[in-house]
Image (cartoon, rainbow, N blue to C red; front, side):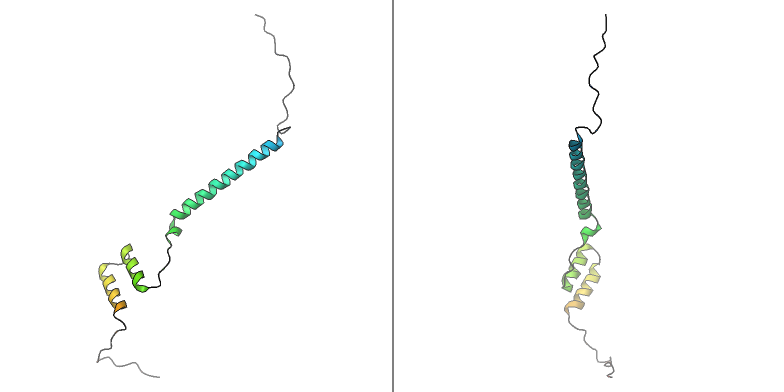
Length: 103
């Protein structure tokens, strides 16, 4: 069994010879894919984080009171007391309270 070595072929090309443009395009595409992935991850984190819980504050105090009660920020007694305060108009003066002094 006589083994013959393979005849020498041409030497391999240097790393970027003849393929420079292809490798640059591959790197640019890879960077774009990474950038898109980072952007999408940031969006998901943003929509699930504490910043996502920001909601528009209603200008109606009764609606704000209802929302606070629904979220459990205030109890039933506090809700009812505040609701009565907001819906009953200005407090009535009792006869034994003197009016404020006039300047």
